[in-house]
Image: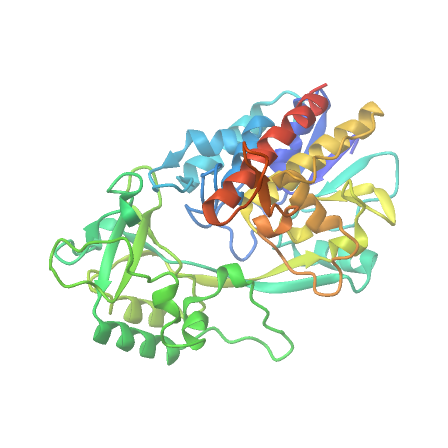
Length: 450
């Protein structure tokens, strides 16, 4: 270890951090344990592996907090957004990518950069307190050895929750005599989504099967705490028989061309690769055992003969209590030569993880150049996400969080041309958040490019 900055983990956060450091003319060493060791959820040898084609979610930067974060990252020369745009697949207003091509593209850019050295090894010890800088971007599935080292260093401030992934189906096994192509409200291309309709009777039989399915068992010592943004489909069903028709199986904005009868519920399948041979079951993350998944999901009209390229699964994610442990530049307060980036900090979601990697890369480059870093404006998606992780008042019930307008400074009204206040609601209010953020981020982008 003879370089100035070392990054542990080549996921989205680690890869983005390495890119941001290198593009500022600073050498960086990126440590990755794959392909020698894989976590429970990862299968691909490349960097920045995704488990879902729509992991980057909405790309609407005029009305959506996630889309706004996309745009801010594009403006900040994000490697992750560059690769996402280069490998995107049709998904209406969402930014979906071919997962394998996306990971391959990130890996190619990283390995071809002359200032980035990649070392394939498993880091098992906590970084030393020396003259080097370190970024721990090992993700929510940090290896047992490194997790133990982190917990030993930070004490009882490590937490965990359970995360689930959705099944992927071969498209040629879907029955189009029952299913049809259509995006909700006809947004995007009509081929972005495949829809499978259920009658009221079929829906309630499906829910009943979910409730009685054989599911993954946990050890008695494991406290199951799901992240609300990624609940297993059967856990949602346990909250009430109608929960799914107001969630991932809502039938609105769709018209079945096979019959005049309106479906009571609809299952949507999103394109999962650029060749469009695979389809991801939207919102169908699950902890059911594989045999139960095959049996129950084949109850859905159009999926009676479905062949599964990947069954759904569940794994334990770990995150630290960042507001207690980190300063506003993501440094560990007890050892400032170490930063944390990505989902291990409690930013939930791949794009959020990459954004914190981008900030960590910028902050670390400032340290090397002995420059005072400029924090992103609090009104931006960058600034709001950073504040969630480092605000010392956000301690008692700290939980993983996706970017959302609830993290932003509130906008209640605007001044009209006649000098009067107009209360903002709905899409107008969301548009105001986005407009303010994109205006406020421009001076910051100029500062960090110097």
